[in-house]
Amino acid sequence: MAMGLAYLVLLLALQVYGPASAGAAKMKVVEEPNTFGLNNPFLPQTSRLQPKRDPSPVSGPAHLFRLSGKCFSLVESTYKYEFCPFHNVTQHEQTFRWNAYSGILGIWHEWEITNNTFRGMWMRDGDSCHSRNRQSKVELTCGKSNRLAHVSEPSTCVYALTFETPLVCHPHSLLVYPALPMALQQRWDQVEQDLADELITPQGYEKLLRALFEDAGYLKTPEESESTQQEGGAQGLVFENLESCNKAHKELSKEIKRLKSVLTQHGIPYTKPVETSSSEHLGSKTPTDRTAEQLRGSPGLLGNTL
Image 1 (tube, rainbow, N blue to C red):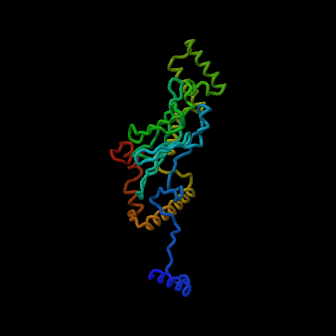
Image 2 (spheres, rainbow, N blue to C red):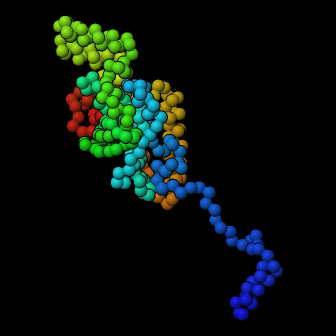
Image 3 (spheres, rainbow, N blue to C red):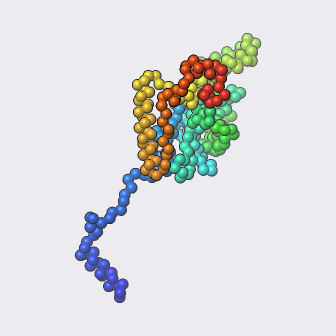
């Protein structure tokens, strides 16, 4: 009986006073998504993965081209690895730490060819790791479906991936010769004939085949590999003129300001770098002193540009 009366009183009160007045407290609506770290997918792409160069063109057996544009992932421990054939390999830490790591373990570079067979895909020029760049080798093996089966790090900053696919189950699926255009096949036939006629040495044979694979786009020339390392290595940015340098400086300043606001928003402290004058940066050495030091060699980090 008492509960019935209480319910009746509540209904009468709602009719008399109506809903809560406009001045009453309202629920706070959070319009901006939470950002657990600077690698959060809600943040702009510029603050996440930063490839040092574009991938090499798609090359190799034509039946593997259908893998281009697709990505395959594998979660091991607290890391998610993603392999995108003919594009790159990435690693993402699966934690809620504010600075959870996401990085590039390599960008599509070239094939590894052994005994005239495609043995693996080399992904180079990944994120910096100490004095070099991260790199990955992807081995293609026969499997019932396309999947990234295994990831390991046999040596520091060098990763080994195993990718299973039914596209390589045929015993001839990874042979180099059938993948070549007709003109290069004829060129290879001539090299084989010259070796049989003892017109070239085994060393010359290997050198000619290497040049043939480079012309096909399966391997990079030493000059191409060196230029790629210089573009993607830890040697700093190179600008063609003062205008491009100033433009890059403005963009970096804008990005720093945005990152500071993100850190401040989440109450994450950061330290401001100590500013130094240009004279402190340059020191008291003259260009002649610097040149002489480089010729003598320096035991410190000054001359270490790798």
